[in-house]
Image 1 (spheres, rainbow, N blue to C red):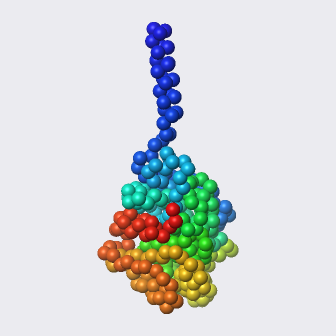
Image 2 (image 1 turned 45 degrees about the vertical axis):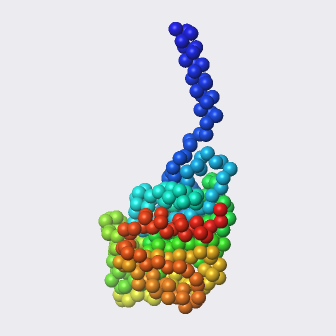
Length: 340
């Protein structure tokens, strides 16, 4: 019995040495991992959105076994309403990374949590929701370069996003030149100026926390964009929104001017150097997408100012082909434009 125990111990020790000699955690397929990073840019916001942000990181096959290899990164910004888990369940970023690897192009994909108390911070900056724009352009990129095996240069960074994330893509790229070299907007929202009506302003002013919790997509999106783009730290209500609603029922034009000041269509002429410096710039949208006219209006302004971009109109609505197109169009686009 003692001899048998000794043999078992020797065998276990040999297996342990063999395991130590093998690559730990061999990664044969692309993998999506949920991680957490701290965003100083979100500290102190009035909605109480946490500066501790979850992030999906999709790494290519072989990432674990090749500790000296570095990769270009595609940062992906999700849309409004759904939390990060639901966004990843729909987009399946690891499947796109796997397909790209099989085509000979290895990437890391990084998707941060853009959720807020009102279901989306629109990758913008303000005291009510916080500075989601810098969360992406500064905090997230710095965290990724410090914790993942990225190629830490703009030439190897791409930025893409869908809907709210498509808006965030063009906003972040225009206002933070030199961070990303190529961008891809998918079904971008909020490109032309938005406008509050007096009825909407009254509804927002009267809204309770319970009503906000129960509000549907369309109703809450208008509230969330107002909280983001026309904030009021002195507002006595919980939303901290400047609606511009006056006692006589009219609106102070400043509220809508602030909304317009966050429109990429309005902002575009101020950021031509940043747009013209891009290595690659792509836009796509489905032919049945309710945001189609806004995208066309934005592209007419790009044409007016001579900004180069590529565009594809495909058969589809706002969301039914996004995961497919990340795999078949977005990563192939970045394979052409990012340095490896």
